Image (cartoon, rainbow, N blue to C red; front, top):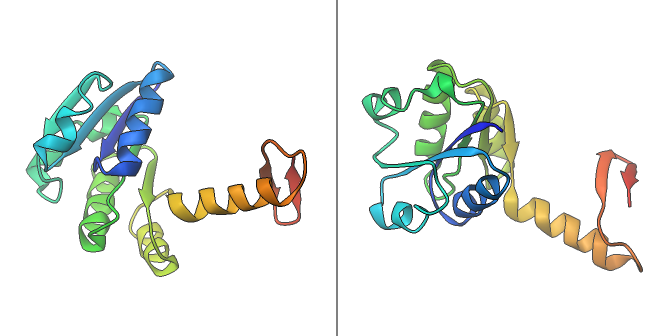
Length: 149
């Protein structure tokens, strides 16, 4: 069991919360929109409403207590960048940030993200591989040119 912080409860953050919860992890969620948080109360261990670009809000979360911190803000890159940097500065052990473009990923990695994910691109690549070949149910890319099908 891991302790997980998810900041930003859009579609990606929403699905992360539900799936981590189903795997018996402790999940804290936070968003500045109360409606997005209230939908996930049955899945989250703790839920808060607040603007994470505010350092005081982030300090109140106890960032260093989480095994994983996910920054799931895709619509406002500046906020995503600020929050990623602040979370890492406040002791985030492993910070995963969502990006929409390669230039975003570059800046997120330079400012504290340990890993950057592109949810839409990643799933599109996986589906294209799976449906381009016959009898492939799933695949995992190990390195460029090597995969498990």
